[in-house]
Amino acid sequence: MIIPVILSGGSGTRLWPLSRAQYPKQLLPLVGEQTMLQETVMRVRSVVDIGPVFCVCNEEHRFMVAEQLRQVSDMVGDIILEPVGRNTAPAAAVAALRIQEKYPDATMLLLPADHIIQDREAFVQAIEFGKKAADDGALATFGIVPDAPETGYGYIRASIEHDSGRDVYPVEEFVEKPDRDTAEQYVASGTYFWNSGMFLFKVSRYLDELKIFAPEMLEACRRALENAETDLDFLRLERSSFTACPSDSIDYAVMEKTSRAAVVPLDAGWSDVGAWSALWGVKERDQAGNVTKGDVLVHDVRNSFIHAANRMVAAVGVDDHVIVETADAVLVASKDRVQEVKKIVEHLKNEGRDEAVTHIRVNRPWGSYETLDREDRFLVKRIIVKPGSSLSLQKHYHRAEHWVVVKGTARITIDGKEVVLSEDQSTYIPLGTKHRLENPGKIPLELVEIQTGSYLEEDDIERYDDKYGRAEGK
Image (tube, rainbow, N blue to C red; front, top):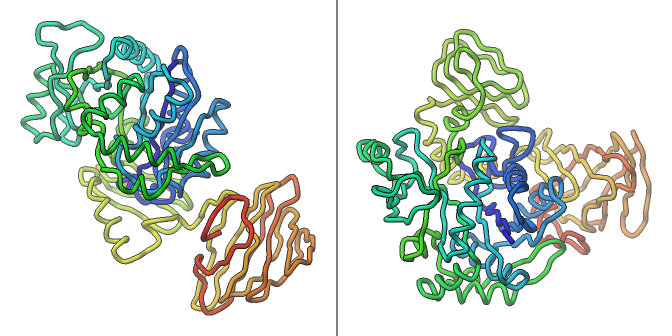
């Protein structure tokens, strides 16, 4: 059985302002109607003898990950929560240890959640080739057949000089991102592939190799899993053990050291969508070479990517540009310098600005909220609560709240007293009062919340009961 393990821990800073720390690119529908995480799940459904989907993600994204997996698959295994990021080798280790408990002879297919693969048939065929190699004891990786001398990818040199035409080749070496001249030599040689970061191997083989090359990592991951706690639909790794685990990639920890590394060539329209220019490259363009989405109006514009999320964007006389509009930020960049977007994100983080972390609309397990207006002593939000969902029983020390129901039905508990409100009705939550908001209806509940007080941040909250197991924030 092949068990797909999806790694969904990235932040995608180079796709800001759409991708942000609390809502990264793998959870966004950047290419089609489904998110990149969902596309990754759908891609493996045609693989022969495929098992349940496992996922490794961080705690902040857990509810969005669980909901997106539920929407596209009825075969979801464990969702493993990392308390801190420790790169791909430990993430694969805890997944392998967990899978070994349930499926001792399984083969693990390790996939990042944020890749585009346009030719699914070629991808499935490559997995079949990799499975045969894994059955023979190899640790297979998938090498992308290069179509350009890219300097943003690592490369894999395969042993194919006198043995072309095979489906799987021994790995000679992994090489770091090259300069332009070196990359051109790599592509011309025909023996180098882009390093995709996708792997296929028996879980037992990977754990055996870790025991040889990274025993401290393996032991830390084993302790983190042995002391893990089940939390709703999630498996929460024990924090101190996993925090003590060395941080390393699978390439450095195992693949560069093992004698069993093999590479499966993959020519399937692959991209890791590492920048806006990459997304422009994989999407359908008009006759002028433009990719547009949303309410976009252009005049004499060529070879540009323009995304309008909330309002009309008009562009005149620009070439080779990226323009991305969201509710609270607009990015304008030359297409050949979009890798530098991460510098903007670093600057925002250094200033402590919310635009680096979250959108105006913030997703929660019970629904979402967005800020409509804010001044020193008041804040206005639009809150949406899903049918059957509820916020925690909570109170605030520095703010009072006034709720106006716009759509649906609200069941509200205030100091133990329950009231049901419908459209156009309202209530007041005094400062320091225990309260809870629920949606007992069949349609989404929408309301406007007006906060007043001396401190209006999300950490002004004390919880008394929460079915989602959260410690802070709504």
